[in-house]
Image (spheres, rainbow, N blue to C red):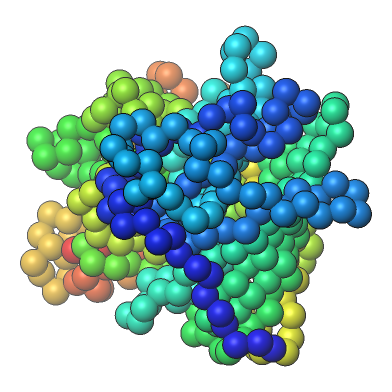
Length: 461
């Protein structure tokens, strides 16, 4: 019911002006960590700076007792970014990261989860490299109005037991249009899981509310290479597609593509089983900069833990030329928009997966695809598509059929080629009734049964 009161920002001009590379030179001293050497989980504090300059209050929760944690400049090694240490005085915390012995063969503890900036957080499973991010909430993402970025302004870090295998974090989200309470239960492992329980309260109506939002980077990938191999010989992306599982059991895969401007697509569903941005490409040799280990970037799979009702998963793709900026977003938009005075409860699980959701093992996947316009200048452009399905379980004697459809035309000359390696290639042509965009859907059947996920693709000029 209270009016929004923005959190304080760091008063350090130096910290606000640092480049991301300079900011990374500032190191927290491990010996100053919360629960240092007493627990498998330890908390390292992060200074504000660069793009994340809000000050965040941190507390330790030990049973019924709350201990407000104090910021100390002496806990940081400035790494030479400031000749005068006082210039880097932040006045408070910018966030925190949790370290944990994810890899038994390491002599150090690995980063497990980090909260730093607005409502962004990232987490890792074993052998994974930071890539995409999750967020507490998204407001007006992709609309021609200013996007709002609520912040996690205060945290309560629950002290784990000496042998605890999970960590609980509580957070207060706050912004001009809403506030909310969050509980994060973090379970580290091969595929680290974060269970999220939240309750959102609106201060005012919002045009678009995105729940369980994910954000990632995509510059160019498989389809771009197929369409223009000379310009895009190698890939650059943290994620290469949106995956969706409906309550009917149908699985959908939409590859990301290099877009112009802002492209928004919606996938309508009732009580979806899950959705996520994934990184299926695991061949490090096809990436432009192998040392960045794009092949080790995880996907995040969102699994609702209660009924979400009617709504849609929205995918936002924004034109970009900079690897340092996220230009992809995916989130759930409820059909019934919450209003002030009506709390919105949310429960879901986020899992850091390697290439597919952990349960997706029984159907073929769309490994690669492309749609090329042979004459895009026409009012009804002629399009040619090719899809390759892999990891198939097929009857060697049965006929494989391709089911191809589009709301923008009638696919023709559909061909199915069973390769010697077990993959199946599907090609087809179509004259589009829309000169600017066309959507396609395709999957394989054998003996009356669906044997692949649904490939979903959007071609734009």
